[in-house]
Length: 246
Image (cartoon, rainbow, N blue to C red; front, side, top):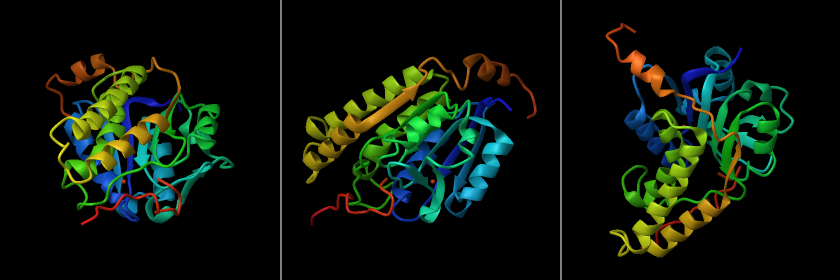
């Protein structure tokens, strides 16, 4: 069955430091969602392989996005349970979809395999994805900053933009976050240089594959729906995390 426009599936695991990204993804979905969109978020224990695959089959969403630990061949979800790897026989579940994985290293082999399996676009990282854990999740610009840039891609897709425009927005958001720590209001933060550096590394290692002209949530569909109708990273590797020095 072809992927359905205006239908989104987000995976938001919370264990093993993934809550740092999942709380930001949840906020971005809440901020950017539009009337007429079907949005499912699998959070914490619901972000398990069986449930994710069940929802991919049931919803056939045009956008599948989430955070998880990973490596060159593998993407995992809650408690590092494997969802997909390059040898998975069910990669076809991602056919016709825009797939965005905030996860370390998947752009090396898994991302290309996802596109080869029929996905229309993929975003991910060819090395480790770095972030800051000096504050509690979701409590400061410092801990949110890498994820604000990363998840701008799906935020723009929710707004009705093409995959190419969403990618451009993502890269611009990276620049905005980098400048915030170098010359902006964040320049006096004790770890400002480290924060700008991890953002620069993430940006340089971010990968987009596939088609740039796909519009997962067409504006026309959103406008029609406005009429008065009823209607949760490196796999098992945590050494890359930046800790705040007191």
